[in-house]
Amino acid sequence: QVQLQESGPGLVNPSQTLSLTCTVSGGSVNSGDYYWSWIRQPPGKGLEWIGYIYYSGNSYSNPSLENRVTISVDTSKNHFSLKLKSVTAADTAVYYCARDLDQSFFDYWGQGTLVTVSS
Amino acid sequence: ETVMTQSPPTLSAFPGERATLSCRASQSINSNLAWYQQKPGQAPRLVIYGAFTRATGVPARFSGDGSGTEFTLTISSLQSEDLAVYYCQQYNFWPRTFGPGTKVEIK
Image (cartoon, rainbow over all chains, first blue to last red; front, side):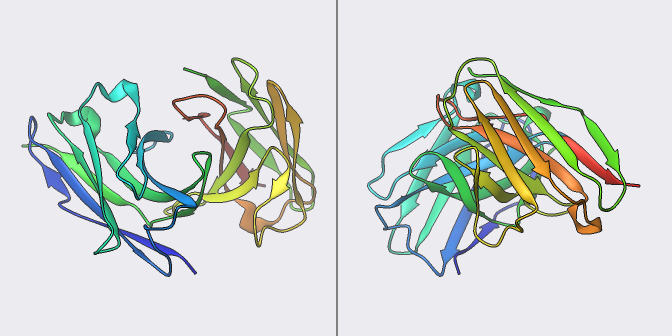
C-alpha cells in the first residue's frame, strides 16, 4: 500500500519561500509508471493542481502560479519537494502531495499539511 | 484553461435515495474525467476515473457516466458514510483543473 506524507513548516512569513517535502513509502518515486504531484486547497475552498515531477527530474507547474514553483525529486531518499517563492496570504492552504498516474488523475494522496502565510 | 463547473452546490437526500451529481467542462475533454470524494477533515479519495471506471475498493453504488462536456456521478442508494464533498477533475488539457465541488448531505 503506497503512503505519502507531507512535512514542513506550518507557518511562513509573507514574501518568503514555502518549502515542503513528501516522503513516499510502499512505493518508489523512481518508478517510471508514475508522476508525483502537489495540490493545494485554501481553507473552505476547492482544489488547485500546483505541478508534478517525474523521477527523471522533468517537471511542470500550473501557469497560474507565475513561475514561483520549483518541484524536485530525490530518488535516494524516496521523496519529492515543493518550493513556492514570494508567498502571500493567498497561498495559505492545505498542501497535498499525490501519486499521479501517467499525468492524469491522482490515485494516492497524503493526509495534507496546513501552511499559513502570516507575519 | 478548462473550466469545470458542478451542480448542484449542495445536494440533500435521505438514506437509500438516489443522488445524481453533475459536472460540466468548458470544452470537450473526451472521457478524461475523474471524481473524488472528500470527507470532512480528510484528503480527497479517488472514486471514478476515465469517466466511468470505479477505483479500487469503491462500492458498486457509485457509478460515473458521460463524455465530451457533460458528466454525472450517481450514488444509487445513499448511505450515511457518503457524506462528503465530491469534486470532478479533467485531465485532457493542461493545467489539470477541478470543479468547485458538490456537498452531499444526508437528511
